[in-house]
Image (cartoon, rainbow, N blue to C red; front, side):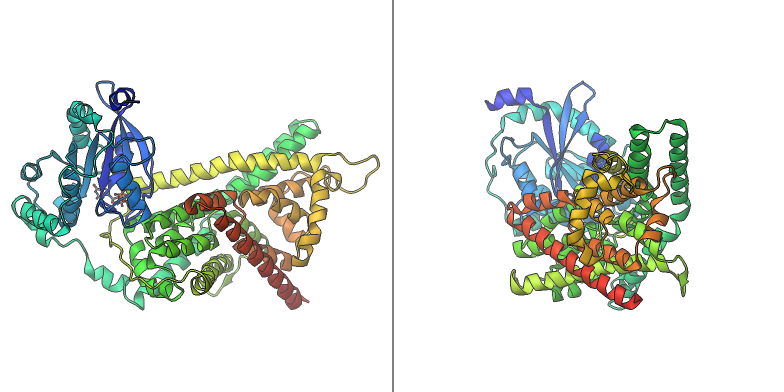
Length: 629
Ligand SMILES: Nc1nc2c(ncn2[C@@H]2O[C@H](COP(=O)(O)OP(=O)(O)OP(=O)(O)O)[C@@H](O)[C@H]2O)c(=O)[nH]1
Ligand SMILES: [Mg+2]
């Protein structure tokens, strides 16, 4: 296909390029109506995202959001993504028709270097002077017209966190769109039009431009060092971090009671109504034992997940996270992890998948691989329903001193994940992937009051993801399990519950031989099989299995009291220990395969995690039995 023909066929393409954390994604979301993740630290975006900006003349522009980068010479895999898009080096793609260089107006000295580098490519370009609100409120004067004249490209001010804060940029894109189209026959772009300027040259040029367009920027103070004196203090900083984490786990249990009870009551009412209004038969059982007991049983945990994310989002938006990374850099360095691993590992508390993708910000391959290998040990939010179910059933809610015992147990489980990840990392780096310690280089963002809009979107997004999982994979697997647990039907004159004669019952009893040494009964063994796909499925599966094992006419009771009366405490603890380690998530393994480009690492990961899970559950079970006996 000739370049001209492809330019006809495709949309105009504009790429947002800029330093990390300057607000590219926030602008992208405003321009295209997308809901990509925005947070106050460098390295949030690690892949290319596309959105569509409709123009008033009926045409549309494809907008690319890209990982932040300091220059066009990449040091990390995420920066490579940006370079490849800018130069049109991705397979089957040409270079974008125009570049929107996004700069943080409060950090011009650093940001303008990349702008100059981009300008030397000789492409249509607009500079978006973002964070104009912060610059103004801090009294930084920028002569926009002069800056534009010096750079030789249009410059517009934007505030990407304000409704319509992108209006000027949008208008400029409209105005320039025709020109972009004319320049679109640059499908395969030469590396640079002019010889690339050296860093020293760039620096000199930045100083010269700032001296005339924004003299205040040369000594502009972006930080509040008084806060950092406490937050990054080697002792007080750690005390603060520990207190924060601790409070979060307390809140997950103490705040969630009301909404959880409401959902539980709703489900019980639904089950009662369905039982009362439908004739007995397979359909009623599918609805009550399969859908309501199974899927509804997982939905109950939505409030706890949202409370956890409420705090994660607050931390992400405040600017605190990179500071915590510096605090823990020495600890991470001792086990051989790069300080850069902190944010990927922390993201893994939400889900290992974005965590593993975020390792693209780690330059050294061995450091990156070690981080990927331990990321699934961080307690992802899919474990929360499992933990909460078992804690709710087996740990009394009474207070231990000022603390809630259930919150304390949850904290211990998270701590077990973190400590074992450190231990595994230490072993990996010591015996397999040696690399020397590299001091942490990470840009500190300024502190910011978390924006309510971000928080609202973030929570909404989380709720949507969770409900979609419940309605998708969890629903499908629970229904499948209902079938396997109901058929073949029991023979004439059978006495026990029907599930014992079904395919799933048969499988559970076969698996029990493997799991009996670690204290799992046949019901748990059944539930673990569909739970290989995703962890929360185990909760739904247990709901269905127990609903089907109950006496014929009893209305499906909620799962918690049932397991509390039927399992030993040792079994419950062993299952908790199992879930700290077990790699029960196929999507994580698939992402490891993609990011490492090899089957070797996901296979290795699954094997070591299963082995750890079995050993940990075994020890826990035996110790708990011995203590109880
Ligand atoms: N006050 C203010 N805050 C902004 C503005 N634009 C972005 N932010 C905040 O700046 C932080 C970074 O925004 P992002 O959009 O994630 O930045 P990014 O450039 O995509 O960052 P990376 O993906 O890490 O390269 C977030 O906390 C935003 O809420 C702005 O114009 N004004
Ligand atoms: Mg971004």
